[in-house]
Image (cartoon, rainbow, N blue to C red; front, side, top):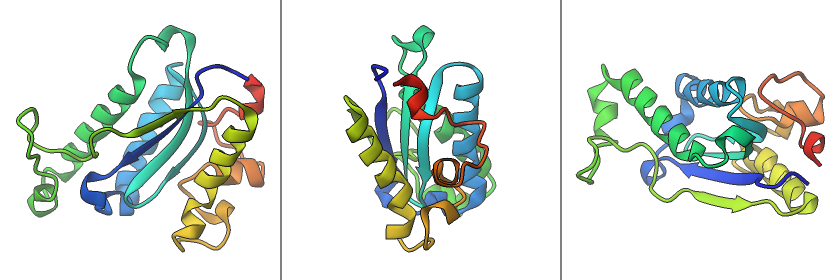
Length: 168
């Protein structure tokens, strides 16, 4: 198995449903697309829920010593802020209590875990894909549009995803 595959979870500040809108989900997709197209990561799976995201990814060799997750979080936060700039009421929900920033969209200390074997990776992928079903956002994982489930279950094309078996 390829070393360094990570399961990453970022939660919206105070579990707010920031990502309920497709407009904001697309900011996350665009950011993942940038990382994939610029050969920074291989993306194996993802789901964008209304108040959190789960991602299975691996840094590509030239990015091993860089904090891709931090860049991803910072970039998406900036884009979220820019897209809310004319909606001051929504933006107020993300006022930071920290001195190092005006707004905060992600909870600090996101969850990260390294996948050490295929069994654990497949469990995480199932967990990711079943998240919207468990939250009653759809009946079947492959029905949820903001996830990699249809890629794996229905073999639908998804230019973001690299099948995890390609690196086993």
